[in-house]
Amino acid sequence: MAKCEICERGQKFGIQVSHSHRRSNRAWKPNVKKTKMTIDGVTRRMFVCTSCMRSNKKSV
Image (cartoon, rainbow, N blue to C red; front, top):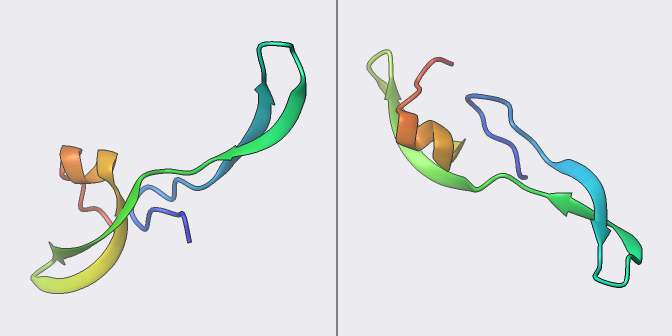
C-alpha cells in the first residue's frame, strides 16, 4: 500500500548499482502517511504522500 490517493504516485522500480558495479533490482516507495483531510466539507482519512501534504493539494 504505497500509493498516494491524491497524486496517484506509486512504487517505482529500478536497478541498484554497488561500488563494484554489481546490479540488483530494487524499489523506490513514496513517503505515504495516513492523515485526515477535509475535502468539500467532508473529513476523511486518506493515504497521502508528504509532498502533497506539504503543498496542501486537496483535489480528489
